Length: 398
Ligand SMILES: C[S@@+](CC[C@H](N)C(=O)[O-])C[C@H]1O[C@@H](n2cnc3c(N)ncnc32)[C@H](O)[C@@H]1O
Image 1: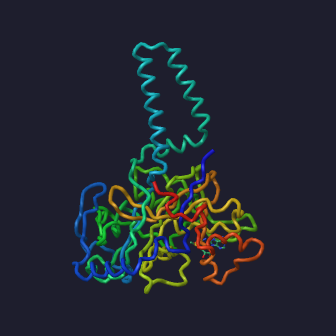
Image 2 (image 1 turned 90 degrees about the vertical axis):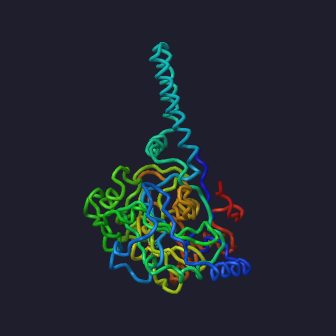
Image 3 (image 1 turned 180 degrees about the vertical axis):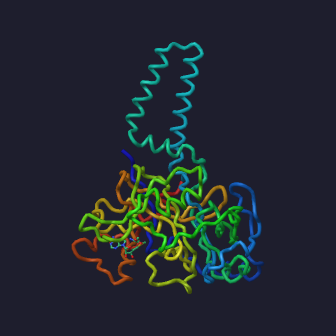
């Protein structure tokens, strides 16, 4: 059986270690002696744009917005599923080779035997092989798990040139702009997709009308505009109408439209990056990014903003079936917040994470009671993380 994947983070606590005083001092020194953050080339697909043309930016973008990270709309494959997909590829190429051998004079019965053997293997792999096939055409090695270096960005936020201090996501493109936190001096990268035709940003008002078939929702339209050649993502937003005990009845959630295997990188949390001072404390859609920065999807976000907390939806033993974690895109070096499947998710199941007890406490919501066992969060209270057996943040590193 598949082994559950364990991730070190939840939405309620820092995703990176707090910087030490020494690191902060070093950082400040670097900041005061350096120029404004460098504009770098996108480095990804389809050419380069090194500078952004402010006239291309929508006029209605909120002025407090600083940067965008997590810019890709489609799922990419993380290193943890690389072997799985490569295994599938090897199998396919073996099959092709067998067919060739048979065609070049091997006996038909031998070819048939090979096929039978392989079909059996396929049956063993069950529906999972369908999923692997599904992802075979996605470039490999594009995403690897990674962590932000423990640096504070607050000094750099103010030094961003005005032309790039406003940014937002655009689901019509696969890439817009991203903070590159992989260097000691953070940089901002822009892609050619900045100049791609625009469609409306996904906002709460564009939440799909549940009375429409899902293929006709605004989100699906956005998805197909974003990457025409891309297959639909293996999840969809649904209005929650049951079971009666579901804690978010009448609200929305994210549901699997295919079986999803542990380790799969499902999607990124696309949102606006907001510094603490302009963060909305009442936002229900904020993930912690660094000591000073938040990912807030209350105004602009993608499917990630619809992932509910597992409490009251799954049992304590079942736990969350996905987790959020930072990873670094190998192609661009950029850091994104990815959602990774922790446990096998069957087609039609709700995709849920843990927000952490602190999230609920800060909202004065019940964290006790029948469905809100305090014990569920004991690990968090102990300073350990909920997914890790030993509190070691390196658990999921590759
Ligand atoms: C990130 S949103 C999740 C998506 C939300 N259902 C929607 O339709 O926008 C977070 C909010 O959803 C609600 N929520 C999510 N999981 C919940 C749970 N297990 N129990 C109660 N409320 C939940 C809470 O209001 C929470 O502040």
